[in-house]
Structures are given as C-alpha cells and as structure tokens.
Length: 584
Image 1 (cartoon, rainbow, N blue to C red):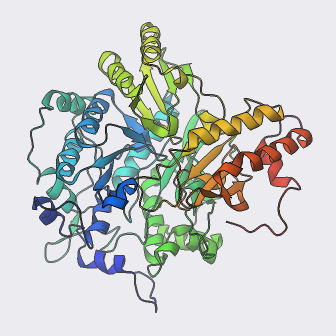
Image 2: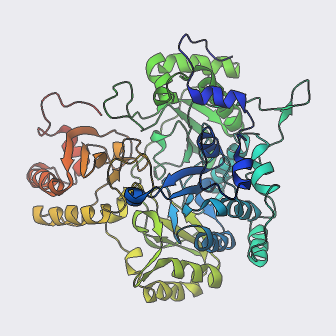
Image 3: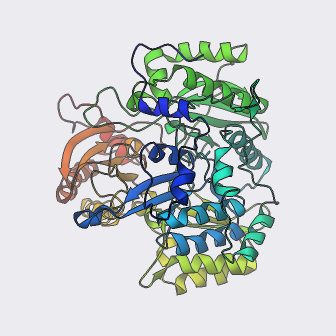
C-alpha cells in the first residue's frame, strides 16, 4: 500500500496510472509517416522502452532536428561477439555511426531518426537483447564485475545478476507488442542475427516473467503495480576488493561475501544515488548504507522487498526528491531495516566485514585461469568510433569477425575482450595498432581512470560541455601533474554536463559538474576506492581557469603529502577548503 500524501501527485504518476501498460500513443506516432518526434506524455512513456528523445542543440539556431537515443540492456556488460556485430551494423544504419559505452555497462545508439526506431529495437530484440526498462521509473541495467568469470565465485555472481535482472523487469505487454510483434522488417541481417541468437543459447535473458492477472483477466504487475517506481532505480553487484562498479552509488547493491573459497551470500547496500539539482538543498548525492547479510537464495526475495519499500514510501509528489536515498536519509537506516524485516518476516543478520582497495580497470593482457587471455582496452569517453587514422570501430568489428571474443563493457566506459586464445594475441594486438589504436593498451593512470557523460549536443539536460572537452582538460591536468613533479600517478577525474551525475563525479578525487556554458562546479576529495563523497570546493569555475586552480592544489599536494598518499585523501583533510565550504 502506497503511503498517503496530501500533496498532489506529479504528472508522471497520473500518466502511469492511466496507461499502466506504458503504451501511450507510441504505436500511432510510429505509424504516422509525417511524425518526426514523440510528443506529450509519450516523451515520458518511451523512456520505459529504452528511448530518450533529443535534438541536436548545435543546430537549434536554425530549427530543431529531432532524433532519439536508444539504450540496450546488457547485464554485467556482457556482449557476445556475434551480438556485437549486430550492434556495429545497426549503429551505421540507424544511428550516427558510433556506439557509446555507458557508466552502467550498456550501449547507447545516438542520433536515431524517427523512421529507424522500430527497425533498430526490433533487431536488438531479434539478437536476443532488449531495450526494455533501460530508462524510466524501473530497475535499470544491473551492473556486475566486468572481468571475465575465472572461477566458480565470479560465475555465480554473474548468474545471480542475471537472475535478479529477470525478476525485476516490468511485466508490461506493450513493449513486445509494439517493438517485437508490431514491427515487420527484413534488414538482410539474417545470418548475423542467427549467429547472435546461437551465441546466447536461443533464449532472450531479458524476457520478463509472465504477468499475473486480476479477476477480469487483465494483466497486472504485482511488484510494480500501475505506477511503477517513484523514480529510477539502479542495482549492482561487486566482488571485493575491487569496487569496479562503484557499488555505493547504487540504489541497491550486493557485495559478495566469500568464505572458505565459496560465495556464501552478499552484504546488502541500499540508499545510494548521485543526482542533484543546482540550488535545491533538498537534493544531494548520497552513498548507500550497509543494511545486513543475505544468502544467495534471498537475492530475488530481498531485491523485491526493497523495490516494494521504494514503491510505497518514495516521494511521488516531487520527482527531484523521489529516489530511495531520500527515504533512507530522512527516515533513517534503522527504520529501513525494520521495514525490510516486516517485508521479509524477519530481520537480516548483521553484515559481514569487507574491504575495497580500488576501482580502476586493468589495461593490457591478463591471463585467465583457464589458460585463455583477456584484453583490457581504454575507450576514450566510452565512444566507439572511427575518426581519421583512429579506426577503433573498424578494428573491433574485425576482431569480432575473426576471433570471436566476448565483449565486456566496464562501468568506467572501457572494454574488455575475454576468452582469447594464446595463439591469437599477437594478431589482435597488431590489428589494433594497424588501425591507429595504440592508446587503448596504455592510456596512463589519469586518462584511464577518467569518465565523462555525453552532454552536448544531444542531451537536453546538459548545461555545459563534457565528452567533447574532457580529453583536452585531462591533458592539462596531466601537464599540471608533471609541473608539480608527480606525473603519471593515478588520479580519478570525472566530468558531467549537468548535476545529474551520470559519470559519477561526486565520488571522484576531482569532479567537474556543469553549471552553465563553460563553467563547472569543482568537487574534490572522493577516493580511489569509491567509498567517500567529494565536496564542493568552488562554484562556477570557468573552463580555462581549471588548470590554474588544479595546478595550485597540485603544487601544495606535492609539498605536503605523505608517502603514497593519494590526492583525494590529501585534499579531503588539507587546509585548502574555503571557510564553511557548502556541500553539493
């Protein structure tokens, strides 16, 4: 039962209640050859189908040019080579020719025209993936460690992530009615689709369980109800000591507990989330609380219980205040534990000890315990593209065709190619070098730890640039390191074009958050382990002043740091903060 409220519900809540199958008038718009965009409520409904409507903001002076972004679902970032080849083909036919790796281990297709949406999503489903619930007020893509399973523990965590994914998918019938059964198209991809289907055992892991039915025979979703979640919800799995998914930033996290060489269960985390709104003190970034210990058998039961608590207690009167982090912060962790105990019939036992020691991706070659190898590749700002002599997209396509590794998207927008035979290593490495992609092997510990959101020109929320300026800003930060005498040392730097925090700047050592065109709020003091929030150091820093401000801090850090002390740890306790520095 949802909590009563005296405030009026948001429009999104009444919209969902009126059309709980999430269909809106999407079918009618797709059938209209004159339509170049979705309008009205459909701009919200399409998010549940994995679609964001956008326009090219570089061209607004001459009129809006509409397109959409389409996001796939890839639990744990896993993309078999045959499925990757389908995506590569589709990105050229229907998008802007690139694939964008997201901070939640998915692919995004940008610049998709209205007439191509149906064919694109139909083909993604034919290749046994999905776009269902990758956006909207639902559980998004489930993240998990991106290094390939090399033992029974990592395989079990991967299996649990897929099990939870399926259990938490919304049971709307509209998605398949519109995009799978409702689209008839022959793109000449029969052979590629067949190979993709074979690579995932002919079964789509993203088909939700059948819906229940009410007394009239109408389908109902007992978990989500008619109005789904108050807001988006993010879930991840992690295996200490590597926090490669930034587990504390998730609404719900499962931290693997290993005893006697076996996975015995998980420590449950709830209440993380980074999105804020400038000038709105009721919004803030927050790291999750550690709630208790659960067994593997409880993964779905507990996950559904947490969903129900958010469903019933989340704020449906203010979407900026609707994430579960605000429930935990305002009602308290003990209240949440008690509410969870009511849902489960018993309280959870105390969490078991765990420790994270870092969160970065490993680049280059690493041997798997089965004798094969995996290759960690740096993908600048997550964008798989061909540009001049840098022909990464072509190289990755040829690797998929010739060698067939598993493509594994990381939560820091990089890529791992796994299950590579020893005999193929030299040929793969040569192929990448021959296509101008030498940087993918050794980007350094600043570029390699960096992350940026797409921002302009496509994101409608962006207040400032991010992806397009980030490489140059990182270059200047590396120059400042060199000048201060500690060049090449690890540093976690992240940038977003708005305060929503998609590239997770709020727990970076240095974070830039777009405030206005060319200006950024400077966040400092997160750590390499991803277990501490950064704080607001300075507001509205012009982009050309960033090297000056950071350079001065680096000079002081070089003089004052203790041996082995990371920049984020030093600045968190250093006497460099403005008096009464405000929180973000």
